[in-house]
Image 1: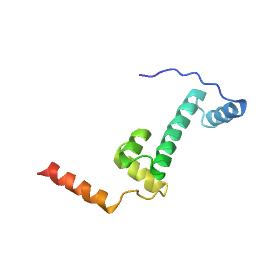
Image 2: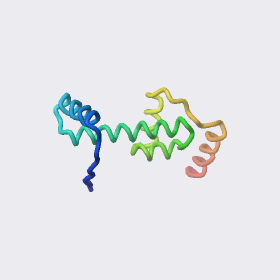
Image 3: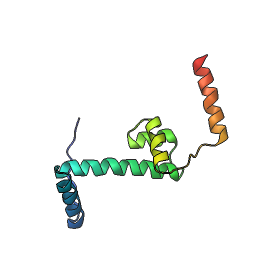
Length: 99
């Protein structure tokens, strides 16, 4: 379900969004939605990099799957926050599932 949100932004920001929309031959509202999606992804990446979010939480923040988040982190050159113990714990959990 879509919701409507009214936001006040400065003229410079509006002009920027309008210019993006014009360049992409799209409506301003679509350009804003795209920027929000990108901002959401960047927020998730930053949270993960700073250790404020786990891989799963970062994926949730970004609105993507964990595997997509892993690929995105690699694409942005972000190193894994996982320690050897995390991998071993993951293996133990997999063993429980597959037994």
